[in-house]
Length: 227
Image (cartoon, rainbow, N blue to C red; front, side, top):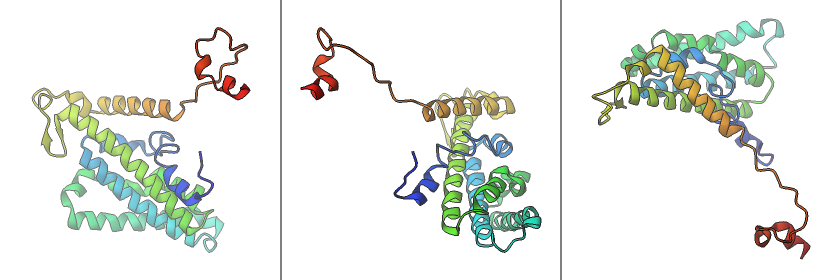
């Protein structure tokens, strides 16, 4: 449920589970499947995407009344590409190993449907603060999804996690999990579990008649209300 008392908090939390861009809305599938052979790669891609998403949302929201509608899409792409170039330079200079691991998928953040979708559907229609909160929430949700998927694939498929060897699994890894087929399988299982939890409904109230001879009469709220 949305937090009516704190709408900015709701903008942040919605992207984690309720509107998770990867596990609920099924966006950004290419980097999700490509870079999650290791948990560290998942964190790196998630944080890089969050940086671009936050920066582009803020700028697009601030300029939403200035950018002409006819050049809206090209303007969005230029803004997004600028932040992608910046994060690329930063990773190449300070984290070259991660930069090489992410490869071309770092550049492809420019056309990531998560970023462009939030720019078109949210940042171009809302204020700067709300757009920043939306970007943070979506970025956290995307990062957590990639980290979870990368952790599962690395642990089972390589017998390692964040550079640490896992007993038993390290000597008997299931290599299929770090292959494309394992990626699709892992993603499918996670999506199924998240949707099951997200769509869980509260138990229905049971209509009953008399409380006489009912084994639950001692705990029945209806009987207490009648008394």
